[in-house]
Image 1 (tube, each protein chain N blue to C red):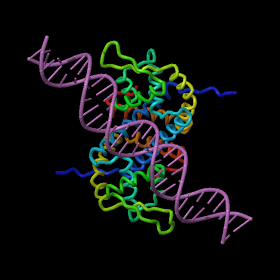
Image 2 (cartoon, chains in turn blue, green, purple, yellow; image 1 turned 90 degrees about the vertical axis):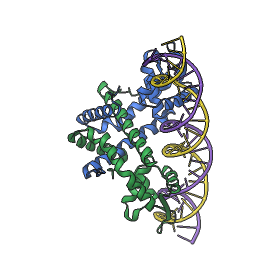
Image 3 (cartoon, chains in turn yellow, green, cyan, brown; image 1 turned 180 degrees about the horizontal axis):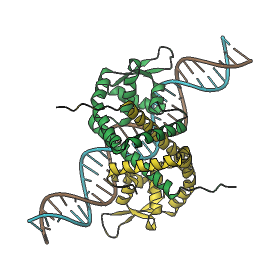
Image 4 (cartoon, rainbow over the protein chains, first blue to last red; image 1 turned 135 degrees about the horizontal axis):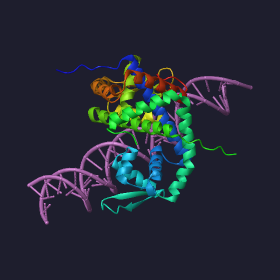
Length: 156
Length: 156
DNA sequence: CGCGTGTTGTTGAACGCTCAACCAAATCGC
DNA sequence: GCGATTTGGTTGAGCGTTCAACAACACGCG
């Protein structure tokens, strides 16, 4: 027998819609700021950040895809654009002939360094400044729980 | 004199990355489920929902754009697709000759009714089931605060 | 009234993402 | 070892979004 749908009660409804509105507004705002100030979308910024933190500023495409939570296809397309912009280059992987390494160029690093202060200020202004320290802590726990629930492992 | 950047401290860093991971994973998952089960992206589902709740199942394009948090351009393109799918139709606005009304068709309503149970189950499974009642409450307050901070008004 | 200004909505191009198909190399199983 | 499967990565088509430009209409103010 078909299971009756358990709809969202008014409180859940309110929570869900507020979450949708807030997270969309936040990401849209940061995306627009980054596009305006650094000429790249937030997803590309994240790729450059991960590369900048990696040893020798290089990472396997696969690991980079995992770190940024994107599909291989998406990363492949993005890498093509980033390479055309001169911000990364590709190298062959010495231990696996299928593999490719994405390497952050000096140009890419400089672009990232120029974009970072403005972006961090945006994150602070639009997110952390609006919340109490207790709320920031709550948000961290909630997000880590959800991330683990959805991806099966803790966020990196 | 240039202001020194105040970087994110390790806790803020962790919070920010967890939030990015969680919200992206959640939206990606729901989007994929909706695309698979109902043949539409989440943004289009939201448009149909808002229309279904409006008096006479019709709304000014502008109001619909505000309600779904999308640009006019985006909504215009979306409406063209939804109209081609037969889920909405457009009518002229009687009080403003510039205006257009988006009207949910019976077909659109039926499609929405068919998609809703699965989608609600997904929201429950991926979001509410993973959190304690206290966390749901925290998430609501946090989201409402952020939404108000970012958009200048409470989420609807 | 009539002119300027703001609002409503659409359009086309460029861009980014998804999905499915695909190739090549590594690994598994016998 | 050798065929079958899995893994790593790319590609092209189709879709949705953004941005800037535009057209049509409403409104305010002299």
